[in-house]
Image (cartoon, rainbow, N blue to C red; front, top):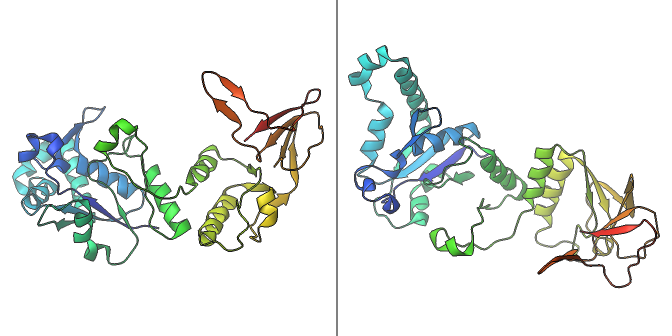
Length: 311
């Protein structure tokens, strides 16, 4: 479980200019649907705490650190009489004191970018697994910690750096950034979890290759173990699976039938079963163009009521 997070908030806030000149971007106000006022710092910190993170290092500029600290103090004794008359103010004050116990402010003397901001927090991280949560990103719906849980789960599975990213259109890439890496497959884990699926049927080529111990094998095994922990896994063997020496848990079969559906990899000749075949060997299954047309590979025949769906 990841218990620490670094939140970079030392930037100039140029997209909020000129307000950012006098107000740190982490303290920009948000009006919630119930009319209550909050800030980006509160929204992010509360989401992290909800996800199980209990130590949050906020990277700020030296000039803005006193502003953040004064904000968390909530006015101290000066506002005590007003808080005594207004319970909602006292409740907000108490929530700020809770946040204050979990926050550590880290100074970034020179604004040299995101990488430098994270580097400034290296002592705070202390060599432990640490989440970096961008200070200008608010989770929607508000307070939803699901993305944090998914990244944390991926780290536990792969034991290597993990990026949780949001796909944007090419026209907006300049406003965000570009990275290169390998998809983790955690969308499937999340889907199985969210749908509370009891069974997952994999239609072959779970291991796409003949190498017995590729460099990604350990991480893949951890991912597969995580999948098996969520649901029953039926592994329909494919041609690459049969060639591979990798051994994984789960039921391993030549084909699997569920009602009128027959799951088969499809690399071997199929018998007419009078139902719907779900195959994984031929791809793509659907060709998108001016219209939509299913692609039936050469040598495949349909008889009677039988049909085939290629995944």
